[in-house]
Image (cartoon, rainbow, N blue to C red):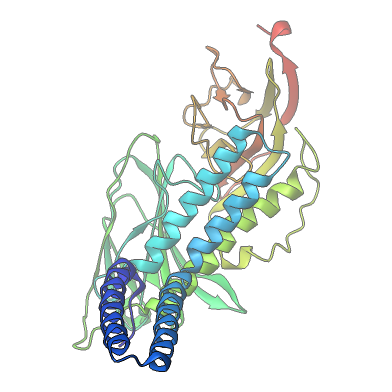
Length: 403
């Protein structure tokens, strides 16, 4: 019977009990042999005892070391702690981002799941942030069997846009198979690979996962997980293979963390300005899940104490866009007093749609301001739905001249 790694602590206790039993038996034998004055036999039995102890320890360590996710996490944390060019605050932010990715990928790896009563995974929470988390959005996913039909109960409470997307693996990368923008009047969404059933989301025979994205009017609104059920459950229920879950979790850990690091390295070639062209041969992007509706722009920014970054542009307030500050690992800040985002719904503009946003370290009573606290540098990201936002101008200014 294969061992489930989820029960490693129990295995360790059982191994300890077995080990103590073996030691007691061997000691008893040794004492008996000493009494019989069989010195050669004693030496043989002692060697057997040492061999037994070594084999037991090796077996236990091999089981524990199969948790590749933990080893990956500890490796990246060690690299951050040894980094000479990062402040202690930045190191804490980086470690918090790694721990978030670790929490997320472990949930994938070790949560028992069925295709017929799917486990709905929430990607981002207030404590778990990574890979360009959008404060206005909630993301959910679940695994599917293309031979099964599904129905999702969704909510539109404080939601202005909802997109449901299915994915498949093609040419060794995740590809969008089908996408459905959910109308406001629709509270149940059907999913099927059978076109004759006329589903809302028509999947393909090779799709394996579905993502649900809620975009909300206010970041403070926390919505419950959507409810997913299978319509036609077969007699022989099939679980989501745990080896598949674990391998996916490992590839996602690499993709989520290393793609963010590589993208920052490309963008920080220019500070408080836009990089003309980014190298899009990032090898880790292939394991991420793109959104059909999302458009992105952004710049690497650095703001010393006593200064702020003035962001000026023009925008159509009837269309959604959000300006977000991320630490260099593409997570909104974990620590301190921060106000990392502003969207078009609460962005103040003049009659012609012109706006000014001030990004600063210290909080000031200014409208359209982002507060980034102890983060001296990071990413200004501009995300929109379907329509790309024109690049605003970026200018570093001093407070004393602009109070």
